[in-house]
Length: 252
Length: 374
Image 1 (tube, rainbow over the protein chains, first blue to last red):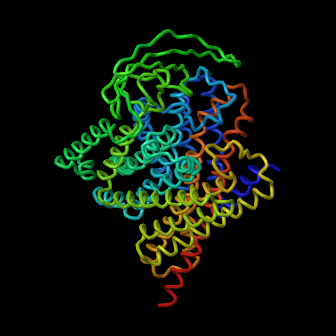
Image 2 (cartoon, rainbow over the protein chains, first blue to last red):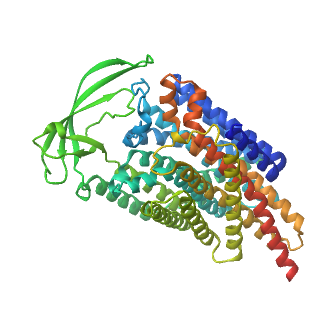
Image 3 (cartoon, each protein chain N blue to C red):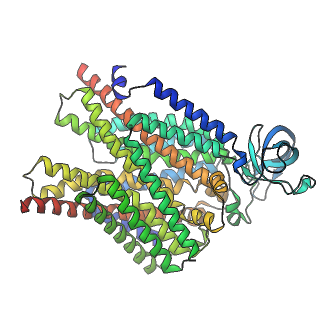
């Protein structure tokens, strides 16, 4: 039997054990994201305009992560609006950044994997680098945005007369915790995903300079830092949108 | 306007200082060639030649173009000399790059007399690394102030131990079991440090530590049992990149480390909230705690597993496109390139999901126990 299928079934079971119906919803969201990522990759490989494909699918992924989750619609809407704004800002940052860094394509460390492959495939790898960086930061943005939005809406529910200043202060206090835990999630993900590469660097005695300027290291580092910038931006933005939404609902 | 003013106080003096240090760092990284041992040349002039159309076996249309670069050597014994160098690049840029004026390149420069031996070995990217990191740190300090520093210290400390563990792994030429022991111990150490930095020296930190450790361990154990029982069917370890030692233990070690941050994220959310809850409502019973803990865990589980999934899978995108364009269909590409990332996400997902019941039970039990004792 295929290992991946069995592992996926066990994942579903543990998610059901942990969360019942919401575990099932989380599993569906994960499966949905998986399909959207596959679709994005296939469409890009078929010469569809990569930026449109990636942006549209990125928004669908945000919908899947944010709305398939046990929370009130208001906080989900706030989280979604903030995530889309952050996604736009990050795309505007990623495109010039990738062109500046010129980290597209492969590096000499990949040469074993590239044997017997045709490299002249008429596809600009800059597009792939940008699409990859955009996709990699979506989870972190959505996670930070939903966490802050959910707690703010909880605060508002318990204390509807709370002042905006107080709400912003409490939101910031919470934001600090969220940033610290998100940092850990992202950096451990980074270390874990590239353990083999880091061992390679040390085993082959790369100097500190070679290591810092290495193409693959820079690609991965940029992906992690971009996600972190997204998480940091999410906190004030979600607070701001929550307060705006509140002003709107009181004038009606 | 007023809202934003309350959120972020802009101190012009600090902003100026920030920009000043930033420009200082930028100027330093663009002029630090003397710190590098390998020769660095700056492109001072570029001359692009004709394009030659290329078509490969899979009917992909590309072109190749040669450019003549004039470089000024910035360091080493040939400092100040100018050299001329040809560089061939393609439209796809899969394994080559088109260089522009002003860029600094690492060179292989044995002697000026043999121009054929001169080669470009890479691009200098420390300026960009500095700039983006500086931007992130600046935003962090602007938005969460000094608290941001704690998060940075935690990451730096973790990175130091991470590299120390790799050094041990390399120096001892670790065998199968050793690899898991080394990185298992590293995971325990990193968990301990992060728990202490999150909650200080307290019972809360201890609970966070124990529940994260047991969840990660159980999740990994379960995954190893499934993987060995199914004989690693459908997973192509031979496609793992950058391998310098035995693949499967290396892969599992990477999976433990990758999941650790997310596991701690869930466990921190649950323990922090339950401790606050027990402080605010002294009349809650064990079941109430369990219900509250589960509710918090459920809401973060889905997004967190997605965070890791997207990190692990996005990195494979260039390889997927290359493989598909080399006349392979999606199912072959999936099996060869993407399956390892998917399995790593699933292993992490199992550990994250297990964290919720384990942390909830441990914390509820402790909060309830403490109450009974009083």
